Length: 316
Image 1 (spheres, one colour):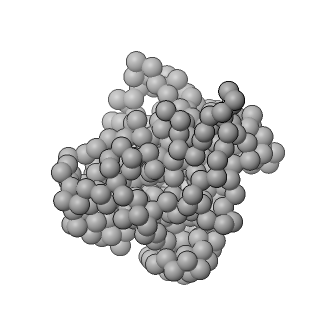
Image 2: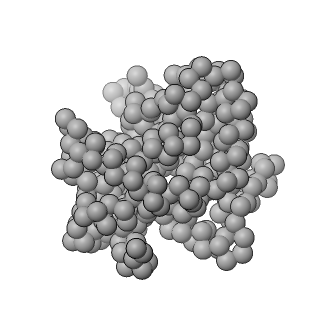
Image 3: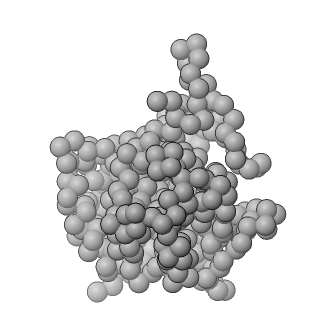
């Protein structure tokens, strides 16, 4: 199957303009980056887990898609996950430093170079190599309870519940690892989750990603593929995010909403008549915006862990 947005001709993969992308959202400049984005969307779809909640939806053609970091949850889920794993000696400081260096190199010189992009993304989850899926899932349950449950935005949670009450399915769509995305969805009684997929063989992580991070255009690919699989009418679906990086996803649905938006998304929402919800105030909003911008700019698991270790005091 050729991913949506691609066509095959003359033995090569050619990029077609994707409908629904807003002006000002740059398309990937290289075909291989587009291909890897499609791969990550396909991987997320194949790993999507449907929970028991609303197994038979009353409104089967409509659904809502929620970003997680700073949209559903205050802060970055990968930050809390990485910090929790480090405290449990899941990986070492040396492993963090090596991965963080690759991320820094990517940020400085690798934005347009597919080789640097691949190297940076490969380092993002390299620290789980050799660990089992079961181990990460079990620790993820503990880390959710201790670090994430209390950081769910009540207002966003209420919006998700409203969709459930209307008989619609609710999916999380996040760059966080699919394992933690599933836990969040299950604990909140949502339908399921789409997230970044780490390769594993016989239940053991290889340290590589399947495709790339579920980020930017890859989220739109995953949502579009999920809609096709589940028989959804995207014009009746809703999407929520805090970041302009999610404009591709927000633009493929009929109803887009900005939650705790960064400056670019707020401006785009106002220009297009999208409703804006902001649950932050004053200094908290500024701090959250800075963190969101940093994470969206390429900081993944390794760097989040380094920040957790160096920038935050340990708590008992």
